[in-house]
Length: 449
Image (cartoon, rainbow, N blue to C red; front, side, top):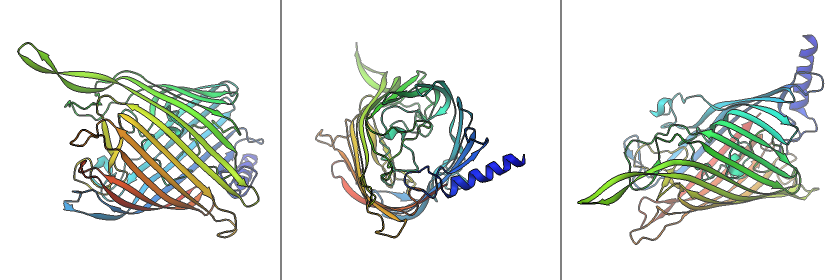
């Protein structure tokens, strides 16, 4: 027992205060809160804790109401994410992971049963087991998991984004047939040379769609078909770890990475809609079921430019082709500050739909020493574009969705302690014939251990 306690203390000292492992740029943090359970460290458990707090000014969409009063703009504070993740290997062939927490709590939403902002529900994000079948070539696992298809960003880690957050277009079925981008199912993952792959077969969650059917496709509450998904990326330069599914947003120049990837998701009869059918004596309405077919192709570059000064570039681009059935469009507003005003209240805009979408981001890590010995600055820009069939003006023309983000990460201890300031230029689709653009300014404070 004494020997084990000494090993734990020594391991924590090594992991927290130094070591050769690098966590996207932090030599102080090392390999984190990782506790060895034997002398060589092959048996261990690791704990990761993180909070992301938003302080935000938002110019609301037309007609937004907060607590019964019309509101043109909002200044608020919210918890974007607050989570705990634990994983362990007591054998090199077995891994267990548990991940729980809360998301999107502000003073008016995200609370218990969604009725107010208080006492948000602590729920499971991931709970899965992994068994190594054949070295790094094949692992099999099952549970509530995040081994997703479609794109790198669909598998993104929330600990090391380049921009302040994901565009959400990358999680196209979030909180519909999945549980916060996770599903219950089985998965396989591994590496074949420089090809990294992950595939899964899942059960869709029962959707919250009401029984009413409209002419535009929506999620089918009678969906009992399996969800098939996969993502494959060829890693030309340094290889990335696939121990866990969470893919890094920026390595801050600590790796030389260039990947090209492609992925998919398919769910038969995942959507339904109503259409009129001509019959003798008139027309009748019938229910039509349609498949969900989602595809993505992407490229990721993270490269040090000057090792002496520490400058680096990160760039990512993805193209999505989404088919959710006829004219499907979904509006989403993260940490929405308004309580009423329809689907386009507060900061919501058309985020996902049947059609084409693209997202691109680029960031530059400034030289060391510009802001002190440890502090680094990483300005970035990101652009999200969507062209969805269901967004047509009175003349029948599709109105594109364009969202611009410009900001900078102030890296106090790499990603482990950082402050991000982001300006968003966001469309207000309240009147599709006269689209306005609203400012949204977010200051994010994040720490993860």
